[in-house]
Image 1 (cartoon, helix red, strand yellow):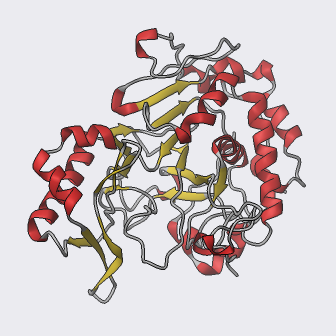
Image 2 (spheres, one colour; image 1 turned 90 degrees about the vertical axis):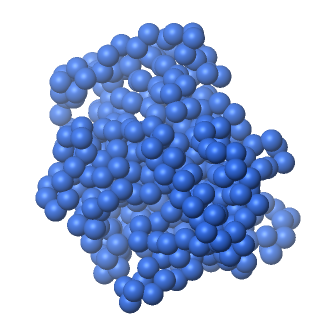
Length: 411
């Protein structure tokens, strides 16, 4: 039995924190909110992030949201028992069920906005949607040990901890493309959902980076960079002074850096090396250009900063390393701080934005009630179409969590 699915009417206090947002034409960026009952949206240029506030009246008790959710996701449905590694077909059924439910409850104007978002090279590089109703009974925040301990993986693979929140996550991901698990992952529940929580090692900021960037890969790697990543708030840090997600739009960052640094980071490369428990450093991937100017007129900034890592430049030496440090620090200092609260969803274009995290409020205590996000990746480019060469590195659809995204399913 899934006791965490017990449903009560949504507490009125939950709605009190939302305020009606007027749609100001001067704030709209490439987005016109269609007329739709209960649709309250606002786009903001701050940090090149578009903010959409869902109207709480759409999910009021008299609208029957939770009763509709229970009808759409009975106990035997795939959402509660799927594993993309072992049964991608069942996982895809869970995704489709979530998509059908989201299509019923999310304003059509928001759905239309999301459908084109992964393919746009200008305008906002992230969308923050606030006001999703989530589970009425949220369990304790999982610990890193539970997430990554191999002995627990088979149990966590097929366990949905916050089914209402995860149905939003998977359903919205299907609007954007197809959800996929992280390559090389052993800690994604169901092979698709990763828990982002605090542990004893999180005593510093998470430096700015892009997730699984295509540049800097080993020559034999066939990983396809995910186009989109989604973070969904299940529980915020203990107070507003706690951990916040930091996002920085690459185009804004390039306008802010010193021109000399820009030239250097386009012409020379950086090598990331991660520190091993032995104290030795291991190169991660190949040297990469932090700034690349693309054929379509866009420029991609790649920051591959990792905890306990160091950096060198095989062709630029100390000047390049120092320039890389400056752009990384500038991205963190200028980046927009977002306190993802329960029911907040942040959708990021991975090629156009770098992200990180500020420090947690209190390391070493309150882990079970601390910050908890659920995360998934989205792609439209992983699957082999009929007649395509087998050497292209694509997987058979719907293999949602291949090993390293190379077409071989993890055992």
